Image (cartoon, rainbow, N blue to C red; front, side, top):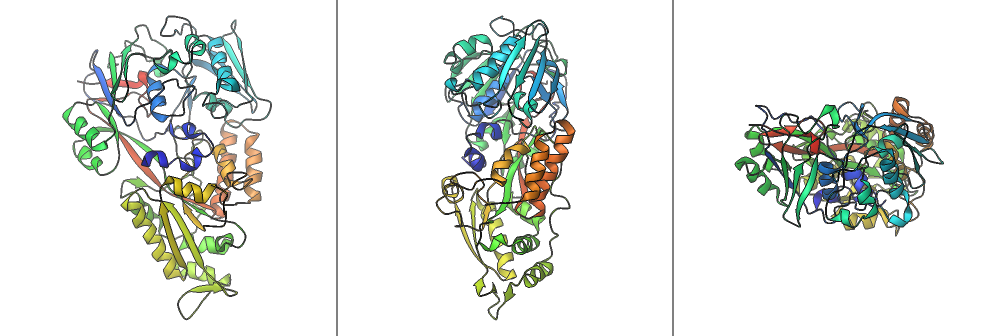
Length: 532
């Protein structure tokens, strides 16, 4: 429940998958020791996936399983952002098109060939509104059209309008083989991919079993079914309790599991191999609605100056997180940049008081500030994820009370915060909100940081920032490194205006016992390795 609620605001767009399914980061876990031949890789899945067709569901567990059996066009490196080949051996992009040359010799689990036509059919299946694909408008633009040239093994996807990060969005699509496209319902029960593993058994709410496909030789980094350490079988068990996962890791009943919280301490003591997965946890938004005190730039600046964000991040994550460097923290990120460094005012309580004084917020005999007879009252809302979140909120409350503000805290579950922030019932009902937006692409932030306010839109903070809008317009017309630089400039404009302040990333860790990943940051079939 807590992990799902981190995607609260993003979920309002109907794109929860795009923002959660690929979450990962850190460095790949190298298992050490000699590779194990024909073993069984056992890992924990936190929830049952339900219907398995990855083109039709937005459920993160279903897409976690899809990585075992389905291949992708490209393999973005989560450390560097460098795009590497997978099903596509070559590619090109413009702001309105992306073309991929598909490897020769790729086969599906039923023995049929996976061709450029298969890829084009997958994209067109998604964009066909009648199919009601969960990926339409998320990974594949709703207006996109794909065409295949079998002679050159090339598929070209075009859009009538510029589509930021079209190439990398398409690279997130699990490519479905023709049998699954013809019978999407059947793909809810088994797999129709070209991946390393084929599903052999599905027992809902218990486990999902897979067997290695002989002859697979098109994985990232030249991985084949004969690569040393590649398991013969994979079993994904549904383990909803992280303490249980930790116990099974330590006993050897599991080779891998994602674990967060206090259970990490005993796993760390066991010196298991790890892969870190950061995700946004602490993001602070200020309401710009006219009449709200936080519409005053001086108030926003002073409130940030009054907080030691290093300490706040430590408390918020219970010492198991890190300071945020960007609002785009879900890996693999399209762009690697730091939009925070140098763009936030330094922690300085005296400077914070001076900022308010110079803006006319005078302190009275009671120690409270007001301006032109209006008291500095702040209503802060936040979703509570446990004691550490509440403790961090109390730290902010005390800091701002000491500054001369009167602060009212309101916490609640995801439904409550969603109702306050995005329902449009009263966009002035809050001043400060702590709620992360989970995105992998900076372009996904645009509707949250500009444009219509709820209920007509998603700009819940009522932000109007011409510099941001101009930078977004520039970035939307660029590709590659130039686009990333422009998107970094755009995000920096929001940070510099103290409109949104990302301050804490939560760290979930993948732990491995006699196992590891050869590449990437997820349980991708061709990346799994076992060791003696």
